[in-house]
Length: 426
Ligand SMILES: *Cc1c(COP(=O)(O)O)cnc(C)c1O
Ligand code: SF4
Image (cartoon, rainbow, N blue to C red; front, side):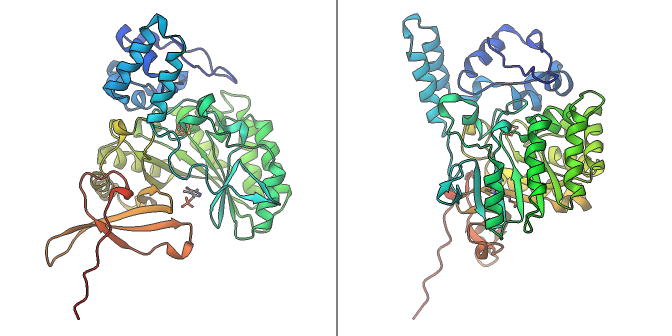
């Protein structure tokens, strides 16, 4: 079986196959033909409890299992793989199953901005104040999340090449669009970039002294998947990374590291706690975000424990997301009504400082919708979701609460019915 290990820059060969029975290895081997699989020795040696790996949240987050495919998909795949005459058919079966898993959910490739008539394909500009930048060297990740909506990027023939290296064009675009005050480096994981590349981008941005640019943020899972990025004691490049972060804050820009944490276990190792301290010493803030996922963090205690620990460690809870309809979506999805209750109970449990989190939100085509509550009409007992756009293509549409028909099974906003206004008499 081909495990993808990440040996570049201080990753060492990992040997976790010894933990797994043969049957499980075979299943991983089969399912990982469809769901791109990659893990590393930090995840394996520090985060997963191998005594109880089948229920371990980080194991499920990293290792594909057969329930992530439908029984039919799994059978078709097994059949194709075991058929010696299937040559060529195997790749077609893999491709077909991937296409059944909605590899490009709505709006992922839209909102591509233009500079002097040229499309800037490694950027996305959906909301007026912020642009996303996908540096081409930041497209891989330290390990792959089994639920990830960016998964086609990890697969050659599904990749839509949504990345770029020309920071000059990014700078020119931000300068031309004065409403932009923030750039978000995203991927993949921009923190897989080597320090020299990252420095080139950041120095250019800072030296450009763009008057409207105020904030830089990085979306990253490196604190969970490879905290050594920020540990000079373990990794000689870490000092350079921390210097780059410090250079940003010294220049007067606000720097926010958006740490992706799916489970409180990811916050418990000494190395992650040391990494957090080192980042905070650069003057950067660390804000946290993650989707709610069945089998991984579907209990309110998971979130309460996670937010409490984050606050204690100096992190700022920021977003609780609702997982997009892509990849092994059926395995991970949870009805909106249940997600709201997980949020509500977790935030009640956490106390003061979890109020900074924006409760369950979906990135839909028009913008980010937040579920504000489940409300009951006292006159007839009918139930509704109360929602609002906290981000909308048209910013005038944000922060206007509205109601949608309650549906206890719905898992995405487009499955909900709008509330009909009663016809007025007369
Ligand atoms: C979420 C998101 C942002 C950032 O939104 P915030 O509410 O400021 O965190 C920017 N661009 C896109 C396309 C997004 O989905
Ligand atoms: S780290 Fe982020 S981009 Fe990478 S696989 Fe996980 S969710 Fe996807």
